[in-house]
Length: 141
Length: 141
DNA sequence: TTGCATTTTATAATTATTTTAATTTATTTT
DNA sequence: AAAATAAATTAAAATAATTATAAAATGCAA
Ligand SMILES: [Mn+2]
Ligand SMILES: [Mn+2]
Ligand SMILES: [Zn+2]
Ligand SMILES: [Zn+2]
Image 1 (cartoon, rainbow over the protein chains, first blue to last red):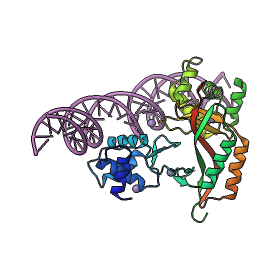
Image 2: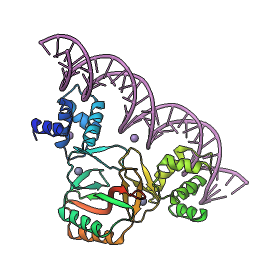
Image 3: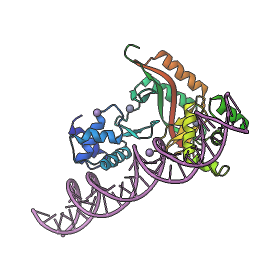
Image 4: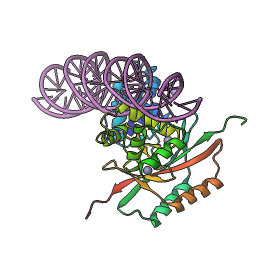
């Protein structure tokens, strides 16, 4: 995705398309690593050395509010971010802590069907996220 | 669950059964609110005023390590704990932030079956946790 | 019951994040 | 276009959650 497309995404959400916002969202779109604010800051600093870490936090808050970005739940103490807001699930590696994407429409349908049939008293479900904990297989294990 | 039973749980895990550990684990077992360390500290302080917040953190770390307690992922910045370690899922209320339990064996079987059939290249899944985001229905809404 | 490793405690330190207030940048008004 | 206004960014300070430290207390095996 090029700068102009990222700029449009930001504008269409009703946000001022500042250089900082463009460059931060672009970096997040180019990562599939679910980075922290600080990791993104380090990514972007090379290209844009005047950037402040506060701006990364502020920008991510804005982008989350406008649903251009999602927060990713972690077991560690720091927030991670994901620019891929379409429905998908996550693999959590218990050894490395790595968080990877898991896309599967069949699974999404199964979950939708299940909760269409089994309603939860007193609760209206809106979104299902499956956290799959396990281990990445070492090369040659 | 009485003190003696909680004490046994701790001893059987190979931990010294100190008063603090007993009273903290007991409080967590009596809560279905997935409390933070500080919330637990406030719970327990009445009954045991000499308790230190560090001890709550230390104890929870121990209990997690011995798998008597699980950490609960949250979107906010603080860790929550759950003394119910049997397989279950969580309802996250987008309005109140409340986290409730969701038990359903049929769902567990569906998930087990699905991943028995659909293996994930390079990854060995061990545990499935479904996060169900939505809203609790107000009384008379 | 003693000895000793373990645990607890109060305090200090650290880390992640948020707030503040001045400055810069962008947008609107004249 | 220039001035006025509003919004965003910045560096620094503040806060909140958690972890580390080191002395004192406790639990438990011998
Ligand atoms: Mn990178
Ligand atoms: Mn934190
Ligand atoms: Zn993702
Ligand atoms: Zn639970």
